[in-house]
Amino acid sequence: MLALKRINYEDKEKQYLFVKDIPYDENGFINEYSGISKEEFESKAIPTLIAHEKGECLPEGYVPETYYFLWDGDTIVAQFRLRHYLCESLVNGAGHIGYYVGKKFRGRGYATKGLALLLQEAKSIVPEDEYYLRVNKDNTASLSVMLKNGGYIHHEDDSKIYVRIKK
Ligand SMILES: CC(C)(COP(=O)(O)OP(=O)(O)OC[C@H]1O[C@@H](n2cnc3c(N)ncnc32)[C@H](O)[C@@H]1OP(=O)(O)O)[C@@H](O)C(=O)NCCC(=O)NCCS
Image (tube, rainbow, N blue to C red; front, side):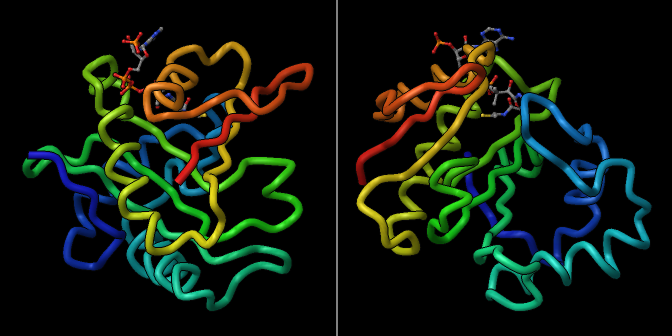
């Protein structure tokens, strides 16, 4: 059974093991907690991310963002991030949504199904009529995930494709 759960203290151990193994940058998905220690994850990363979700302690120019984990039963298989609304840098940049599937869990439909769950969740959070997403041109797997969830290509530049999904 697949479920999206927001970052929380109760699942700190499993969240930690998943997050520390996400590389710093894969296809533009940035993980500033790559290789973090368990102590720092629990004492700094979790409280910071929970504050950001509530719109607190945000860096200048940032909007509230929620970190979700996709659970298959009792195993975390992916991370999803939802920026609650757009600002200019998000309109022209990363958009509302980011996701990362653990390497050993790829090719099993988790990104596709997880994005579908996230879009349901986002309905009550995001005020815009469309979700904005962005993908590197060479990331065909992720583009396919977006298109299978109702996405259409809005425009492209040299290296990126900008996808939108109607609510
Ligand atoms: C891109 C990513 C999210 C895909 O996750 P996933 O769970 O493997 O995706 P799915 O299983 O839902 O598969 C989606 C599609 O990609 C295809 N696919 C999966 N892995 C692939 C690969 N390595 N090469 C090519 N296609 C691949 C699947 O066959 C499927 O294609 P289909 O729609 O034609 O059937 C995952 O590889 C990942 O986390 N990559 C690193 C971070 C990243 O790129 N995030 C997205 C940034 S926009």
